[in-house]
Picture 1 (cartoon, rainbow, N blue to C red):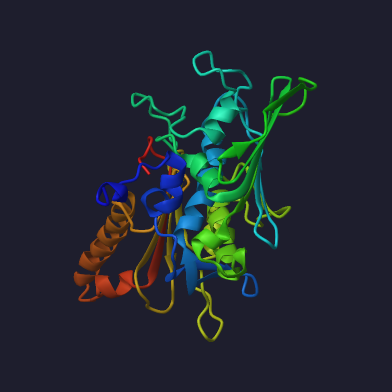
Picture 2: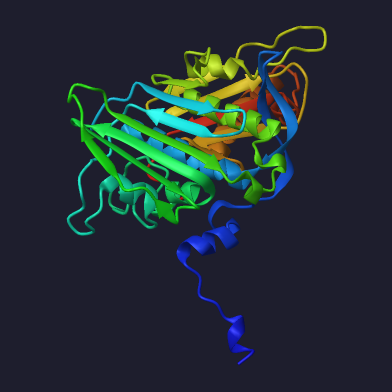
Length: 349
């Protein structure tokens, strides 16, 4: 009997809480080198920060819900607003196509209640659809809910408004409240949550300074990905108005203050690429974002961009050889940072 007592059957929520790394990646904080915005210098810098990728993931789940909504033809989005308090309570709001405030005939639950409070609920299970969205597996926002002390949602669309809150890691919830409002009021989806920072190993059970900087950069990336949408943090929109303006933030002066040439930027309906020159050689750096998702380990799109630059430099090298001039392509590549922001078909994340 002693052997039998070792075997346990967990609820899905308890499994997320006991083995969060299976769902959101590591919940340990570790040093990572990355680009981050330096407010004093007014540009991007390459720094080592204490990053918790699991915490970043649960914030990303809500951010990507909002950015996925940009492509929804049910309503034109004009803004995404993010607010982060000193204690680390996070609010993410957008005015895009609203979530239908109706009950599912099959499950007898309101759709927002299912989307935010019931695992394995998703609108993206149709594999024949080519929508450029990030979430497809039905976990998404529910993981944020489970790994938070409290979580609430407000949805407004088509003359109705929905409110519901959860606590105790999504185990307990208020009854959904639905009211009638003026049908002329704009659509709204607002999600507010306080992550359980202790589960992510953060001291004083509050967000760290480094993670605030990481989230600031993450929201900047989203603003660069969708420049036609006003994306703001704590009430302040970002100063750049285009991807080209954003790319300029990566240009660094030399120690004497000399600035390099402006970035070479190519934009299309499927995204944008920037080749950012530097007057001093460094480590080759490629930063990619696909459908709003940061790809930390490169990928096909990043490799393709690097091949474009390398091929162009090799052509220049061949042309110069005819005049008995020599350049080292590999050395020149070390003078470039590459940004690749693309909007592709649905990706698995």
